[in-house]
Image 1 (cartoon, rainbow, N blue to C red):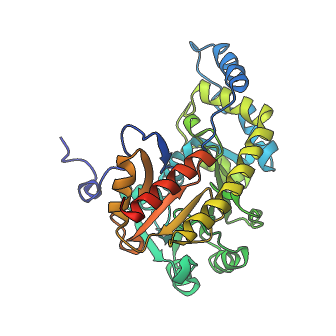
Image 2 (cartoon, rainbow, N blue to C red; image 1 turned 45 degrees about the horizontal axis):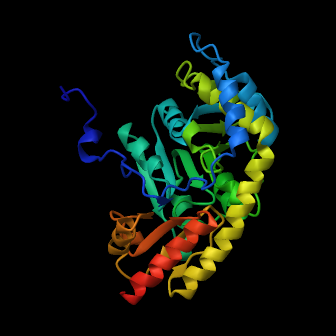
Length: 348
């Protein structure tokens, strides 16, 4: 039955995550703080009042207004998807041909979703210290249709300077340059490059406390957003996501900001403590840390999982051999991780 399927699927593996989550989950870059009980009840009441026998607002108008209020801009600049994954899929589906460029290592779905559609993939290795290789990226952008830059980058945690991105963007005016700001809330500053005709931004609620809602968006010039909306499936967001996300943005934005501040505080502490244990910790402006264990990272990750702590390991990426990506958790979770690493280090 697969004879008519795309040949590209034969050489690919499905994206997979661990099954049952461990008690301490530091492997998926989610927010570690659950909603307070009063906020949960408030959202639950709003969802309970929905007419679930009706389709939701296909344009998610109130939600786009709430996103525009928080992010800046006009609601007509936003196209919404089921997480960043669907936004990436919509962008790639809109292409008839052309190459897709992105730094490597970076978010795996840029490459996976491009290869599924049999688009040419140009993954440009990052330079030393995981900075952009400007010369190699500039060469790769020749004739490219689309470029993705996660800034801050996943899994390295560093933000790419606007000056470097501007050089690439201005040098390839016919390429659509998408700056993925999934982790930008944890950075010291946001990009100032939106406004160029060939620049779009991606964002999500997944990293700031609402991963379960599966909400992502693209912000682009209204004319481009209107064209991309032709690719979006009807009613791609369910009514419960639309309602819960709208309530969250309109009424709990201060709580989101509080969570982000807590993560940044814990990030600094966790980085310092991990460094004191002898690990190399790369500077991060995201809600996670990339850690060079200077040893067998896969073995260490397996040992941590046996005692109930999940961290991310990159077994299939030689560039990240020996590295762990550790999501910043609550103070008690971070302390448990540090205690476990001390015990494993001592061999007792």
